[in-house]
Length: 309
Image (tube, rainbow, N blue to C red):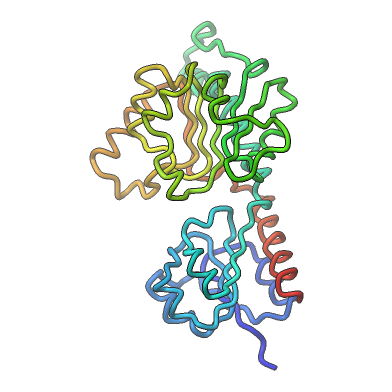
């Protein structure tokens, strides 16, 4: 009997290919493929491993009638036409559990940087500037933290926040929290710090708009480690200018291909980065040495359980 074939089109840790072979699959690792070349090869494969190389549209997937599963070595599934996959019985796996700890630690790190002005203080000392009063920070202890989206990432963050003696409010429209449960209005009314852990969907695209920011009764520190289009830059700039957003940490941007930025995108980002109470990172919250392997282990277990291999 011929082994089912799996195509890996994005670079992943070697443990994934090894694990798939242990499950009996024939695996081809083709990191050299362009997005345009993938559709030509897909008809020969029953499984596809991706990260973020190309959107898997219905049109593209229709060229792979034998495809049985897609596994994304990461958390979000916004690049995959899930409705089409469901209609064709294509199983779709993500590995949210694999990088939840990395994301939670990253968010905590960004929050601590903002609270204690570590980015500003570090830069000044490097430049030979010794200012103590200008770098007086504030404590996380005693603050109210609103977590919007209480899946794997939100829960992992809440676990780490416990040790900081904060009040946690957790809101999830589709998965009500079993602890720290709150409404979105509760977060608007009470939060000092707000962190976003929702997937990118039609509903959440552009969620952080002027009305959203104006809904908070107190100035907030806002952190987004989910997807960039959830928090467009223009409302964030307005929020920083008005003081309604008093601190901002972004691991993601609406357009992460910086070389393609329009003059407007560049101007908005230049304005944001001019504020000392901002921290940026290049979509690496879930990107650790450990998560590189954990993600693969999660995917392998899901594939094994689904197909009972």
